[in-house]
Image (cartoon, rainbow, N blue to C red):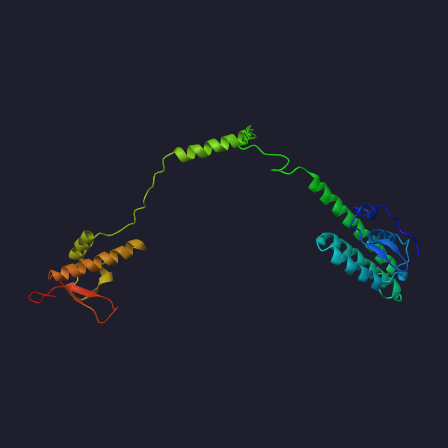
Length: 260
């Protein structure tokens, strides 16, 4: 089996811990940390290690280390990885199965390197000064003064355009209301009074309108002439008739003694 490089150690080392888990197996006697270190460096044949004896001694160790559960948890991870790695080595190799035991050993080594890096980073963080314990902040810190420097990058065209917009806003705006051409009621009354005497028989109201009235002016003339015809009928000066609803309105000069 090819030996993999080993360039790191678990922190703290097995020989430096007073509460290290000491194993007494048939093929190994010593701390669990060292066993795992040698196993991931492929310096120990894990197939000769009894996992049953390892578990029994670990349970006895847990019973003694109830006050330090974090230490027992670290060793639980180590024992689990040892058991997993041994099972991978003992199982027959399947050409279709990936990854191989060698790859598993390499992955274990990488994970242990990551664990060591995390422990080292955590130790560095805990060693830093803490606010309120090692260092203290000022009760009322001074504020920051901002210094703003204005930089103008407008061109001559931009200045002239801005000046023109300001001039447009200051000039008064004259609103001119367009006057629509209309025929007043007085003009319609005068026109009907002149035209009614020229008709001796019934004539449609539209016959009294000038022929040159078109568009809005004609609509205004029709409305004013209709009201003027009603006014003349009220005065008894014309007679009105209509054959039905929405039919043309006819009128003629009123007969003497026959008010409309």
